[in-house]
Length: 374
Image (cartoon, rainbow, N blue to C red; front, side):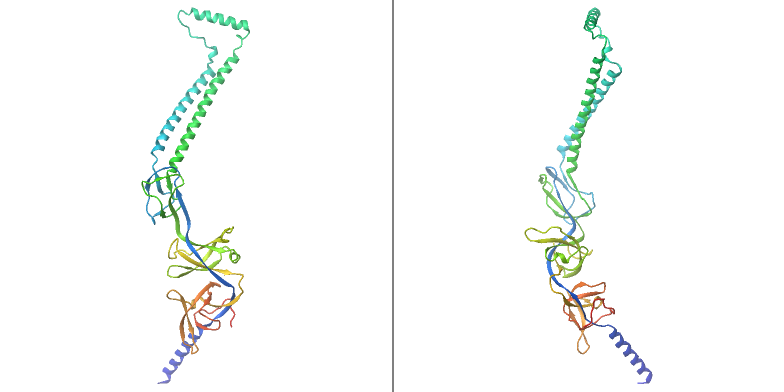
């Protein structure tokens, strides 16, 4: 072999060994407390149960389980023929009340501008009896001292006509209230989607007779999912809102990070647990109702040093992640590991499968601040 090929071979070997050395990282340690794995249930972000508000027969159902609808779409309608008949009767009563109101206002206006007390009585026959009546009535009024002032009688007539107007107004308000009540019941005959979502459970069929309060269907917003878990009260101090914890879904043993979304303010009086909800990333497999697990940190357990590795060293093949560990001869071998929480954006704690001081292959070069080399 000539000198030139030997130099190329030497340079190639030097570059390869340097690249391999650059990818070798010693497993560090990070102080961390213990974990408790708790089972939970996957739930939708929002879910409502639509119930009947009026008695009747189910007339229409918009779809089946899994069908999607936008907010405001009609999902269930109940037959409202009887209510429609009552509405027409109420409208007729309202129209009659308005007519009576107009008549009362005309009578009041006539009395205001053309008082009946000053109008002569209509004559009958030869007009002589009327003349005699007026003569004697006027004489009697003058004799009693009341004929010269008719203001009291005019006031009484105005009050009477004004009372008729107020009575007519009250009847209009009563008719309008009755009509609004019927219209509200007609609206209650239709159950609409409160938000964009899907039907998750259909509880009635077309033709069923329902009563007020009877569930009709369940409607949920399932684009985003949550895990709901009952956490023992002693573990809750280790959680806080927006905290990220490891979780596992019962679909292909999927591992994800869940964010604490809600911690109930009160514990269950019988189980002495507190309901905690964890937000899941968008697009996770599965759906509402499936089993899931979350890893809750136990602040009461003694702190121990756990292995920590770069995330770039993890190879995801199959149900569990693995890493390439160098043996005593420097040969890489695949080993399954179980990961815990993330220390930062680039490093993760290993719960099992590795020991501090072992060497692994990775392309990551900078350890986290609290990573101590053994």
